[in-house]
Amino acid sequence: MSIVFKSTFVAVVLVSFITGGCGSGANQADNSSGPAKANTAAVQPNKDGTIPSGTGVEKEKPAAGKANVQGKAFFNEKPAAGVEVKLCKTFNQYMGGCGADALTTKTDDSGEYLIKDVPPGIYEGLTIKVFDTPYSVFATSGIISAAKYNIEDGKTYFAPDTHLFKNDLKLVSPKAGSKVAAAGIEVKWDAYPDAAYYKYSIHGDSSSGAETNFDYINKRVDGTSVSLDKPLVPGNYTAKIEAFNANDRKLTQTSQDMKFTVTGAAKK
Image 1 (cartoon, rainbow, N blue to C red):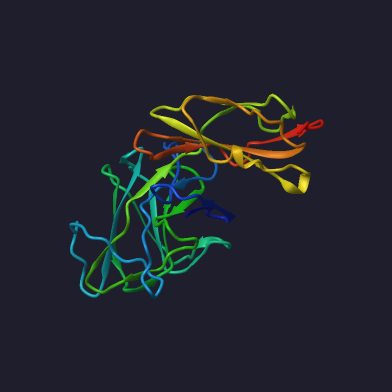
Image 2: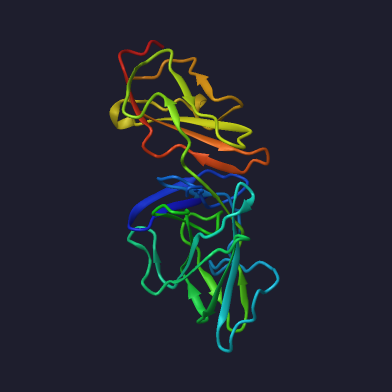
């Protein structure tokens, strides 16, 4: 799973397993606004909870008594240029994210980043900003909390590739904040560039009386609409649509506030 968080307050979103990990965003240009996420290959932590370094070619040798951190970010399998990367000595995913002692850089035109002159030690977070949004993602997937990294003297730490995705997919119906009848609901969204297929989920807020029908969770659709063949129980719901390219990389999703209300009686 991967996590997306807003840099100023708690906004943790768990992402279901995909062939990738943490990221989001293209206007974000890669993401327009709202929480984002990512797709990186899952990495298994060491026994001490730290994430092992990968391998690669050093862009620069570390200075004496220091270390370097190197990695890459992508969107739609293309380099994500100019995105902010932070290596956090301290990190709290619930209160503020990176501490004030974070080391910051940006990706180059090839989507690569290099954080130089890193004091050796254990670091509690490596985050990548979702383009020009206030959201960031962890650079590692396969875990539910911020990863720890053992940055060693005289070595370059190679971070896992991060595949960002946006959350600017436009839901046409039901519109956010709308009230709809229980039966005959059509879920419709705008086509997204380079999308080969979509997945939709309709989540019910049980506190409002709504019920989640698992026939409508994480279902693949090759077009841009689906008609629900069963009525929904009255209450509040959230519609989530995700777009994927032909290589199963997530491109974008709808924002987190795509909520609508079902009114009237549902006949079962």
